[in-house]
Image 1 (spheres, rainbow, N blue to C red):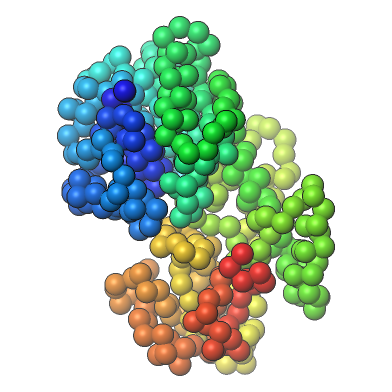
Image 2 (tube, helix red, strand yellow):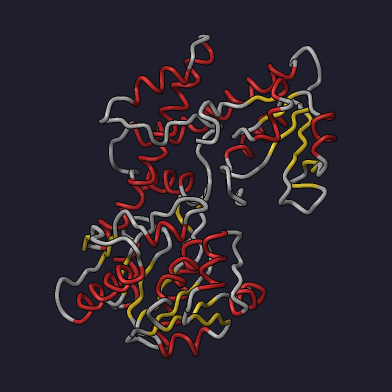
Length: 400
């Protein structure tokens, strides 16, 4: 049994802490006291039913703490899953939180092997190894879907370990950590790759950028169909019957959003600074174009420019069965609506405030409908069916 510290208890950190704590002693380190208290009461600080159930009912050797020194001192492995937000001005992930943890671990327990789970630029791990003169930093990317973090760790598509050492103590530790992930999973025979850290970092960014490409492709297909009076669903179904294309990630939306795809595509584009490319930049631009087209169509449905339009935004969340609206595509649409002079109001049951980023929040659904000339919904729900005539959505497969 290993002693493991997981630093950062967001979707990545918490789901990893839970699966690893099934067979190991795990410390979950965070800087927010309320999250630590919830975890020690076996409640999830994230609104995720699967995580909540595992915490409440599974025998887990999991202790949450604010005291990182004590946790690091005891640990064989330190999993780093702190936030790395994208800095638009620097065209670079803000990796300061990751670097801070690395410095702390090296000062407290330099024998521990660090596994970076945070998303980082290509070349980051090698840079850290050189900066701190250590080979005890490994990069292991996560491929988690919104709202399915625990499931995707229990049934992972693959495990990728980026380790600079191909032999010796650190290489052995890398293989041991992969075995710990396999042990915590339910799925058997998980494809497992051992790469150099830089290649592993590239896998993460290229995988997410491909998903963004696919979203953008079907969104642009949908734009063509809508503006030409064609049935987008019939076209998409026909296209996706080709087994080389398949019927996944094909439901049109207001654009790709969330915590990973927007920042990962921009970071990959920044990594192409001195490399010829056309597609990567087009993917980033396509998302901006889609939001502009969607905003224009919403306003037209509401009666613009003949009248001043009040647009009701139905839910800020990324997708059905989610509570997360970090970087949701609808927020970019809202800004464009505001720039055109529309009044924008929000219906979002998870919000407890009267306003969100300066927009009025209406918590009564009937009042929300009454005030709205048009309702913009990235995804349809049963609640909207009674007012479908007011709704603008491109959810042609309805929550698929």
